[in-house]
Length: 219
Image (cartoon, rainbow, N blue to C red):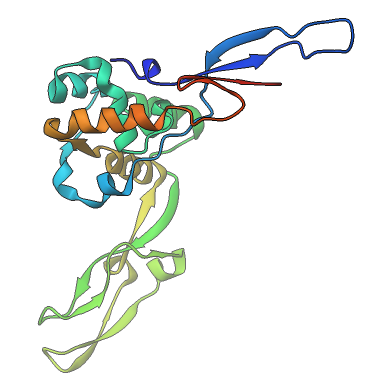
C-alpha cells in the first residue's frame, strides 16, 4: 500500500471565526508534520535487516519490487534508512552526479578539496599512520620521519608517501558511494513493521481528535 494511505489527516481552519459575522471553514489534508520514528526494537537487532548495495540508476521502488514484490512499498526502504528527502539523500547515478558537480564547480576534477593520509606501516607491519586523516598542503609537501622497528633506524620519506590530494569529484564520489550501502528490512518482518507504522500514525484521544485518523486544529 502507498505511504500516503497510512498518513493520518488533519482538518484545519482556513477561515477562523471572526465574531460575530463569519463561520469557520475547514479543509482536510494529510498531516505531513508527523514524523515517524522507528522503534528501538527494530533498530536494535541487526537480524531484522540485510545489507544491500544500490546500483547505478536503481530507485527505491525498483528495490521494493525486488525485495517485497510491491514497488509501492518503497517508503519502507526510505524510512528504515532514515532517508527524508530522496532527491538529495538517495545516491545519484554516475551521470547525474557528474552533471551536478560540473554545474556547481568550475573544475571539480582538478580542484583539490583537501589532503588525506594513507595507511602507512614500517617494515615489520607496525602502523605509523592511520588512513583518512584530513591534513593541510604543507603536510603533503613536507618530508616526515618515523622509527622503523625492523631496521632500528629513523627513516625519512616524502610527504606524498604519507598523504594524497583529494579532488572535489573524488570526495563527492566517495560520499555518494557511501549512500549506496543501505539496509533492507527482511520480508518476514515486513507485516510487523507496517502494523507498527499504522499504529503510530493514529491520533490519541484529545479534544481535537475526531477519529483515530483525523483531528481538527485551528490555523
